[in-house]
Image (tube, rainbow, N blue to C red; front, side, top):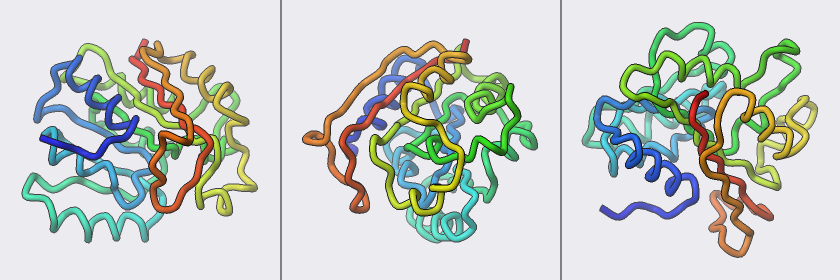
Length: 201
């Protein structure tokens, strides 16, 4: 089956094939917004949960996807990653991040805590795979979230973000995609994307 081409999706396909994932696989989409990653369910059957702090985004995602897919309905929840990690007992095998972690306000975390640690904690509860995977995308220029997060204490750049990932994961693939090979999404313009696939330590 054909599917839209993007570095994030290509990385997901590699992880999916490598782990031999199936319909019992649970995928958590962090900062899912309107749920653009849901269409992956139409290519590979798995259990999808999307979380986002925006009530408007989650309402729109419910409206769009729960009526359009002839599959088990995807789950959406209004929550932050920090609150979700603290409150859920669900297990997940893969976490997807479409350039949302770079916008999280790190001032909400203690010195020895971070959103990457939250993801490690969530993946540690996995039940269907030997290794949990994080697939993360970093955009060199921020999208329309910049106006909202400009006063946040965020990761200073991809290098700091990568170093934080390496505290809890082994990076299995790191890809840089230059702007000439990027198809803008929703008018977003970036110089390059970094896409990291990482398995849990």
